[in-house]
Image (tube, rainbow, N blue to C red; front, side):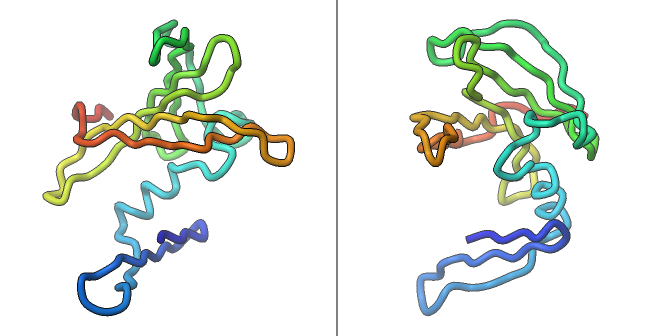
Length: 138
């Protein structure tokens, strides 16, 4: 479990013996949480959030024609996102991650199985890729 209040963060991790272990977010985890964007993500109302969005082109994501966007967050970090050209739902974004050794990388996050909840289309399945696929650029 991870909790972030906009300034500080805490995490609970299960252990092999005993109750879960609680700890504070590291500075890197706080930076990542600031870039996470919350429930509405970085694309909704991006201008008021100080987020720049640029169209890079049209690609294919799992057989869907998709707009490939470069999203530059307030922190200056950038990520790629792909939006379905027909439904305008987010199909994928690439996020920065860190290995246990502290090495930076980029992993894909796929948003699938959208379902309606109180009038909103929400992905019921969010699948994060395994090993980092490339080194991030800044």
